[in-house]
Length: 176
Image (cartoon, rainbow, N blue to C red; front, side, top):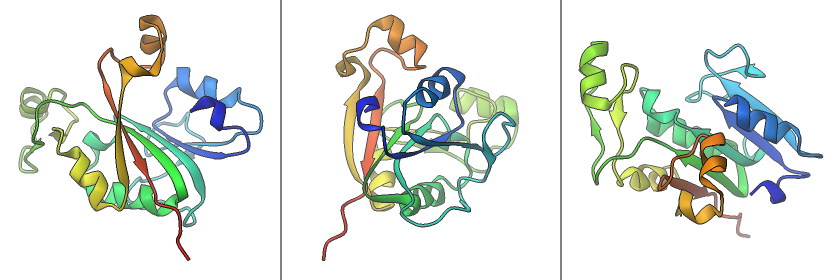
């Protein structure tokens, strides 16, 4: 992925400092970091209402964001909208089991922590996350962290876990 970035536009949500530093070092990469609350991000924006033009990014990196978003389906639709035809979105979420567990009536932080693993999570995704990505218009490919050819130290440095699954959403190219 990194080798394909020079000359491209990348949108990075909830920028992790280690990845942001890596992305900023890529010559010719047009990089934008975004977050709703993080003042370190280049722009504050709501992932469900992006103030960005259609088809404006070649790559999107969105790691461990969607489980915090009330309307994750709308967020996925927005990511698809701003991705250029033929573009790729790498999406990482906490994953457990086959079926996503969510209950919007749970508002107590302790109850959310017990149910979803963290006080500010709104769901715990299952492998059916693929269905949500496809419903937004993406073609989905699964990438396994182990298959990236990175050492365990590199995986840790990049905020990935051994065995973690990365969901790669591709926006189909425009057909004439």
